[in-house]
Structure formats: C-alpha cells, structure tokens
Image (tube, rainbow, N blue to C red; front, side):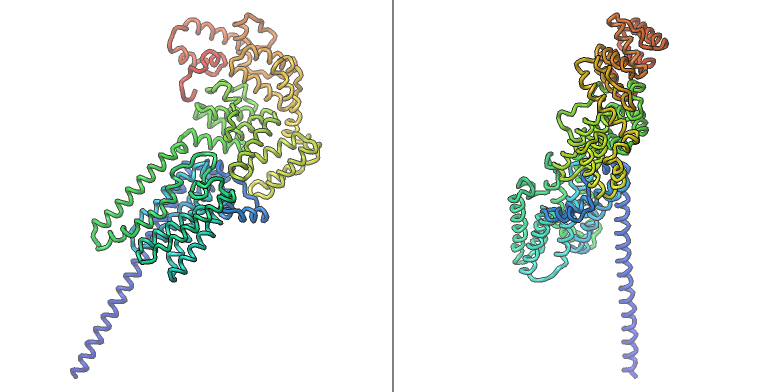
Length: 634
C-alpha cells in the first residue's frame, strides 16, 4: 500500500513537472514570437521613416541620378558587362536605377535598400552574438550610407556590393567545417566576390578575420589568407586596368565618381562592417547578468554612436541638404518632362536668386513664347541667366543648355551640348544619358540628310532597348528618311526651318544689318527674343538698337514693352529719334514719369527700393538698378 502511495505521488509530481515544462515552453515561444513581432515592427517603422524622408526631402534627386545610367534590355550587352571585374554589381545597379524615373519610385527603392542593409546587419550580428541587444547598432550601416544615397557622385553598386559582402559573411558565420576547409572556401569566395562586386571582397575578408579573431582559438591567423587572396585579386584588377588606380582597386573609392575626391563617408560604410562585428560581443557580455543599468548602458552607447554618425554624415553631405540644390533638382525634373508652366510657377513663387534657377525660368518662358513679355518681372541675374558660360565644361550645365538652345531653335548648339553631356556620362559612368540621346534623336532628324537620319536611327535603336524610353523613341521612327513627315510635324519642321536663321544671327555678330536676312517661321520669334533680351541684360543699348533695326527690316521684330523702353532710354541718352518704332503712348508717358521721379529723388539712399514698388517689372528699373537689388523674390 505504501509502495502504491509512493507511485501515485511520483506520478503526480511528474505530471506537475510536465505541466510546468509545457508552460515554460509556451512562455518561451510567446517571448520569441513577441520579439520577432517587435523586430518586424521596428523594421517597418524604419522603412516607412526612410521612405518618407527620402521622398519628401530628396525625391527629385533620384530622377537626376537615373540620368547617369541607362539600362538596356539586351542579353549580349548584359553578359559583356558581367564579364568585367565588378560587372555583376554594376548590372544590378543599372537595373535598379532605371526605376528612378519618378521621385516616389526612386525614394521607395532607396528606402528598401537601406532597410535591407539594416536587416542584413541585424541577422548577421545576431548570428555572431545571439541575444546581443545591439538594436541600434544595426542602424550604423544605414546611418553611414543614408546621405550617400542622395549624392550624385556615389555609385549605387556600392550598396549592392555591401549587401553581397554581408550576405557572404552571414553564410560563413552559419557554416561549419574544419579550419582548412573554411579558409579555403573563404579565399575562393573572396576572389569570386571581388570579380562580381569589386573591393567589397576586401571588406568581407577583413570582417571574417575580425570575427574569427574575436572567437579566439589557435588557428584564427589562418583567416589572413582570404584577406591576402582579396588583395591579390585587387592587384590583378589594377594590373589589367579595371580600376585605373591601385587606390580605387583596394578601397571603397571604387564606388565613387573617379573625377571627384571621394567623400569620407564612403569609407565609413565599409569600416562599419568589421567594427560592428568587433563590438557586438562586448555588448552581449555587458547585457549578461540581467542588471538594468547594463542594458541601459548598452542602448545609450549605441544611441550615442548612431547620433554622432548621423550628424557627421549629414554635415559631410550638407550640399545636398541645401534648399537651392533641391529646387534645382526639382526644376531639372520638370524641364525634362516639359512642364514649363510648373517651372514658371515655382520660380515665380520662390524667386531666382540662383543663376541656374534664373536660366531655367528663362528657358521655360522661351518655350511659352513669353520671354520678352516677362523677362523683367522677376530678378534677372545678368547675361549669365540667359547665356550661361559653359567654357569650364561643367556637366550639370549641358542638359540645361541643350534645352535652352532647342527652345531657341538653335539645333547645332542643342546638339553639341547634348553630345558633351553624353560623352561625359560615357567617360565617367560608362553609360549613355537617355535624356540627351532623345535630344540627339530630335536634332539629327531636324538636321536631316543621310547622315542625320542614320545617326538618329542608331540612337532610337539604343533607346528602344530600354524600359521607359522605348515608346517615345519609337515615336520618332516615322520621321526617318521621310522629309514629308518632318515637314508635317510642327516642332521638327520649325527647328529645321530655323537653321538658316541661326546662321544669319552668327553672321550678324559683326554686322547687325545682316539680321534683315531673317525669315519668318514658328521659331524665329524666340531666336529674336533671345538675341534682343540678351543685349538688354548686358545693358548694350547700342547693340540692341542695331539688332532691332535689322529685325524690323526683316519683319520679325516682336512687340514687347521692354523693347520700347530700351529704345526710349537709348533715344534719351543719344538724342536719336524713336519715332517709327510703334512704341505705345502709354509706354512713353511711363518713361517720362520714371525719368522725372528718378531726377527728383536721385540723392535718396533708398531710391531703388522706392522705385521698385512702381517700376520693378520694367526694363527701365533693371537698366538703372541692376546689381543693386536685394536678395529674395521681387
């Protein structure tokens, strides 16, 4: 009976222990689920925050970056690129960048890449030191690269290669095997990764070495062999001329525009790999023991590091944070899509203190045939705002110049500047600029002839192998070898007809009377307005008067109030006759009132401010006070 009682007691105890273990297991499962849910929420919140920041703050930089690359859906072309050292990462980059055509899609992809960087860091560090609590340490790679993503000179294969390096490192952390096998596999992987993605292989090999050294053991020095293999691969790549300089072959500067000094933050993104692996174990050890102060110290240390990195990166890339830079990117996007009314509205609302913004506004006014009517209703920046200097071959200027001269009807300069931008894109990025290829198609068709049509067909064929430009490029095929089709198209016909007028304006630079040879067409008014407004911005009234006489003789002189005001000023200064120019009586009366008020108040220090209230939108005011206007909107 006693034995039976003992059996019952032991059975009850085993059942109670079973219930306890099941409850403990259930609690453990619930804790793991809650931790995963919290991590997923954290990732989601970070992704949404990154997307909103990228879209609302830097949305228009992504279409600007997209123009530096052109992904062609051509198997032969893709295979040739992959066959080059680092070519696989470059092909992946070009594939992604083709979707940067819209601000929202570019911001979405950039945020996804950064979020994936965060996830890759978390997964890897969790394998290196489980339960490390390095929640904010995951953000270090994101913080180092976030502002690089809006830098025109950063090459996006950098973040693609970085992710590949982290992924390969994660595999080796998970993999088992003896030291000899792991070292041999790591060396082979470093060589393969270098061929596919470039110097990211060195970061992978160094990070793996740091990981093995932190683990201890007697054979950790063998992991210097993968580092040596990656370095030898870099030397070979340099020897074959893949990277131009040994520095680029060895460092993350390979993922930067070779024509400009690399940002130090392109280095920080790679240094973050081995440093994160080195610090994650001490963080895990600090959290041991369950003491609250240790957990708080770990989080505080990480938060301080991330805050310093974010502040430093933002300061290092402050040029891309500036309001005028972001406005330039937006205006460039609008011009590219022919949204001229939006360009005018934006510049009218926010002013033209920047010469480039002024140049873009003048281009939009030309496209709307309103340049002469509105040229002095906003703050002009002198002749630079209309004929910006491009002798220094600044690549940012060439698309703007091409748009300006195509608007004027100057096919040759529009074509030359498009060529220059496309050549720069090929030299620096190894890729064509699709916006400029479309301009070359337009200008070569407008020029016509056997060579013009043949060259246009070549560029159309290239653009037809892209995803987002094929339809527009194909629409120009109907003009090839068909002069009748060109003549039936209003814009192309006008561009072709105006070629002769542009030749006349060039010849008339030394003798304005030759402008009498101009012939009416749909674009000659823009050509004349560009010429005459340029004279006015330069305050060359004698040249303006001579050019105006030539245009009047040709019957192409536009009727604009600013032209009448300029003639009246010239007449008052030289005593020449202004009759016969068709100047309205109201303009004459206003000019006399301007003269009278200026004479009576000439000694006042605030004369410019006073007269701006009444005459701020006139050429009279510009001629008298150009260069004395305060900054800001008029």
